Image (cartoon, rainbow, N blue to C red; front, side):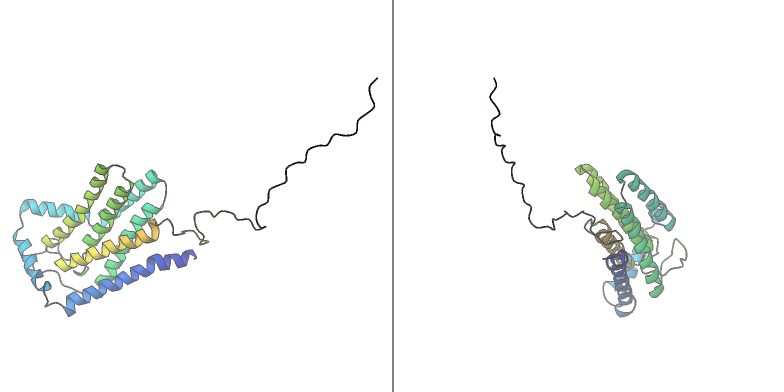
Length: 254
C-alpha cells in the first residue's frame, strides 16, 4: 500500500467519519432530542454552577481555561513534541501527539460551522466567542493533549509510581470540562461530545501512527526486513575431500 493510500485509509477516513458522528450528535442535541431527558435538565445544571461562583473557584476556573486555550495548547504541544524527539530519538510519538491535537481541532471547527447552538442562558465569564456552543473546543483539545501525554508517559514508564503520576494528567481535561460549564460557556452535552472527539482522535492516531506494524514508508514495504530465501532449490552440502592415495614407491636408497 502506498503512502497516500495509507494516510487516507488509516487517518483521513476515520477522521471524516468522526466528523460525521459529531455532526449527527449535534443534530440530535439541537433538533431531534432537545425536549428529552437528560437534555431537559442541562439549563438547571448551568444555573446551579453559576450560583456556586466564588472568588477562589473563579480563579481556579481561569487557570483551567487558560491551560486549555488555543495559545496554550499550541505551545504545550510544540514543547512536548520537541522533548519527545530529543528523548526518544524517533518520530512516531511526537507525530502521534501533534496529529491527535490537530485532528480534534479540525473536527471541532467544522462541527461548529455545521451546528449552531446558543451558549447557556447564564452570565458568561469569557464574553462572546466566535464559535457556537457545540462542542467545547477547550475540552476536546485538553483531552487530546493531556490524555495523549499521559498515555505516552505511562507507556514509557518503568516504575508503577511514575506510571501512576503520568496518568494523573487525565484530571486536567476533567477540570477543563467542569470549568467551561462553571464559566457559563458550554452545556453538559457540549463537553460530553468533546470527550468523544478528543478520545476518538487519540484512538485513530494511535492505531495509525503508533502501530509499528504499519509500514510508514513511501514504497509501502514492511519496515521489518524479510529473510532472503534461496531461489535455487534446497541447499546441498559439499562432499568431504577424498583422502590422498600413496604414490608409487621411488628407487631404493643406497
